[in-house]
Length: 156
Image 1: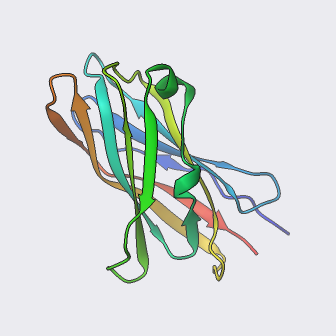
Image 2: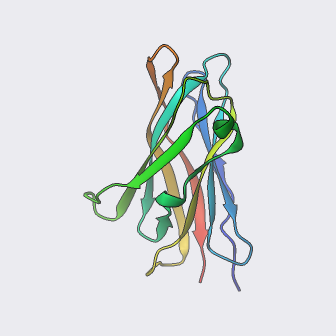
């Protein structure tokens, strides 16, 4: 019996802005999307964001498949994600930058990144986290955002 990845999102505030992560599983599959949402702006909308995803070897993010969601695309933003060299053992890192133009990013869904099981994955529950998230304001000042995480469950 296949169990789709479970949905659990958790966020930690930093100033007025927060990144939320949500897993959108594909039916009858271990594949899905990690939806990235920007929340709680209250007049401090950024023009660009950067964050790192930290994830275990059993989960594979498709960095090249990352897409800006409608709210970010309407603000003329594009996204670029790259898997960084693995120097820390069993944890992988994917860095994403969402930027372009001078329009402010509104709150709501801003990006999605496809995921699936790695070739030699082990079934289980895994934490996917954002780390080192930065928001850049129209005044070019940067603000650090707190780390956030979501749980992904992979089954046989």
